[in-house]
Amino acid sequence: MEIFKEFTFQAAHRLPHVPPTHKCHRIHGHTFKAALHVRGPLQEPYGWVMDFADISKAWEPLHQVLDHNYLNEVDGLSNPTSENIARWIWRRLRPSMPLLYQVSIHENETCGVIYRGEDD
Image (cartoon, rainbow, N blue to C red; front, side, top):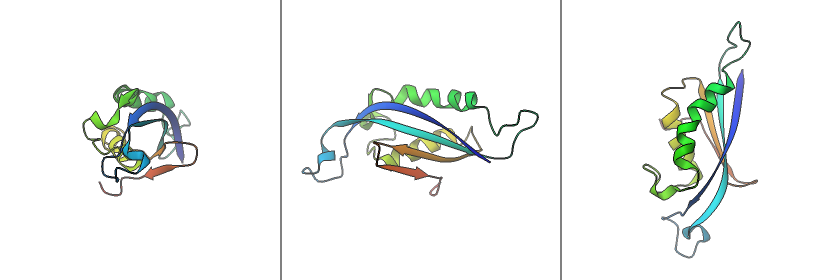
């Protein structure tokens, strides 16, 4: 079974490797939505895969780093594409959350990324 919990954070960034004429080369911001998906068997006697409160607890230190920050200055996010943000989150959560299956990031209502640890 798979569960997920969604979180939001507001942050500014710029994409340093796109041409200077690209709109994302300039500093801009998003209200990002991150979803953490956990997959595993139901844990009895609780009847859940994982307590949503434990997912929130794992997310909170990352939220403190990402929210209302300039992502290019966050260690490991010098090129803060949505893809790199998802991978950054995965790499910080997966060691302590072995049931983490997927991290998705939406930078707006129509664009996003799904990361499942493919290159880890």
